[in-house]
View 1 (cartoon, rainbow, N blue to C red):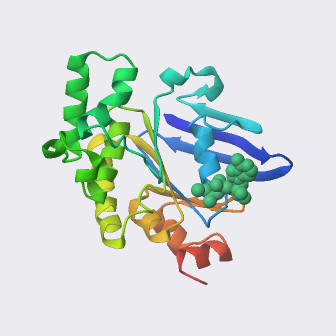
View 2 (view 1 turned 180 degrees about the horizontal axis):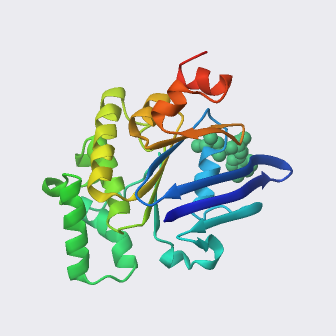
Length: 238
Ligand code: ADP
Ligand code: MG
C-alpha cells in the first residue's frame, strides 16, 4: 500500500512557485531519499507532508486519505530536523518520554516504549544522563529516539546528519540503515549530499528548482541518468 502519495502538488510562497506539480508515491516500508541542491524545495515538500505547511495546489494523501481529513493526532508522522534541540535540563529518558507524557500514555507504557527505543538505538546505558554529558552522535540518537517512541508509520528526516563531522556522519548512516532494517518504518529522508542519498536510499528522487528530474534506484540513476543535470549531480557525466 502507498503510505504517502503526492498528486500534482504545488507550493507557492506569495507569487513565487517553489514546487511545480510534484507526483510521488512512497510505498510501505520504503526508504526514499529526496536529494538536490540547496533551495530546490526539499524541506518545503517534507514540511507539507508533515502538515507543517499547506499545499497551494494538488493533494497529499497519507495511508490513502487526504492529509487534511486526517486528525493531526492520528497522522502518525514523526519528523527529525537538522537542528534538533534536546531539552538540556532533562535526562535522556525524559527527553524521549516527553511526547508520550503529552499524549497521556500511562507510566508503564512510557517505560516500555522508551526502553524499547533505547535498546534499538543502543542508548540504554545513558538514560539518566543529561544531553551535555553525551557525544554528538549520542545526542543525535536521542533526537531519533524521540521520534521512534511514538511508533510512527512514517519518519521524515530533514538533513539530520549535516551538523555532524564526517566520521560520525558515516557511522550514523550505517546506524540509520540498521534502524530501518529493524523497524521497517516508511522513511522520507532529505539531503543535499549525493553520497548520503546513494548509500541510504531504496529509491532516490532527484530535484532541481522544484521539479523532479528522476526517480529510481541508486543503480538506475547512476547508470541511466535521465538528463545532464542528474548525470552531473550524481557524478556520472555522459
Ligand atoms: P531546500 O530544503 O531544498 O534547500 P527549501 O524547500 O527550503 O529548499 O526552499 C525552496 C525555495 O522556497 C527556496 O527558494 C526558499 O527560499 C523558498 N522558501 C522556503 N520557505 C519559504 C518561506 N517560508 N517563505 C518564502 N520562501 C520560502
Ligand atoms: Mg532544506
